[in-house]
Amino acid sequence: MTSQQYEELCRYFVAHQLQMDVGLVRTGNFVHPTRAEMHDCRHQIDLYWEVWNFLTPYLIIANAKWRAKGCIGHASVLLLRQVQRSLGAHKAVLMTNSRFSGAAQKAAEEEGIGLLIVRPTFAAAALPALGRGRIQAAIQEAARGNPCLYAYEPVLKGLTRAAVPCALGSFVTEGAPAASRRVGAAVSPEGLPANKQLAGPDRSGGYPTRQGPGPGFCGK
Image 1 (tube, rainbow, N blue to C red):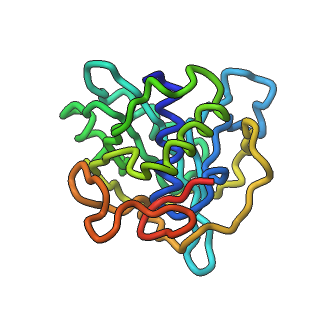
Image 2: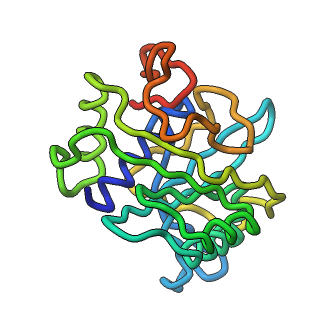
Image 3: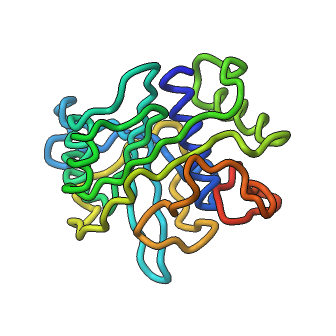
């Protein structure tokens, strides 16, 4: 599986778990309003989305890191935390198919970063090699016959911390429509729900789909 394929799997994972349209889980660059002309001041965000309580939106960002071998170290955690501060995001989550080092877990605990292991449970070789839209379409097609496309394990939920206003900057979204503020279900700012270790389908009926959502994400 390539890094881009993994990002698209994680996009499907987020949407499926939060019962929201996969198009609302976006990829883009954050542009600092006072340094927009400086390319180095743009933060590339693998995934970002909004969840709402009864009144207020919460911005969540995530990095998805595919590793053929090795683990994710603490530098990735600290970098994500720095980006979270720059964006004023309420929550940051680091996802990988591999594992997190002890130092990474300690740093995430201190910085309030969520850690998730998300692994594919299907033959990823059948996915297109390039093109986010093409890859996501193939994932959606695969989900029609087998909605259980991943297994996941929450390593660290992370803490909800006060954030500076999200109006600090703006997103330049890659190929996505204007953001809709409607999500499929009210979700707390705590972020993704914990579940069984490397959970497969829910024993009561399997992972939800858009046509019959249960507690989980929903694709287009």
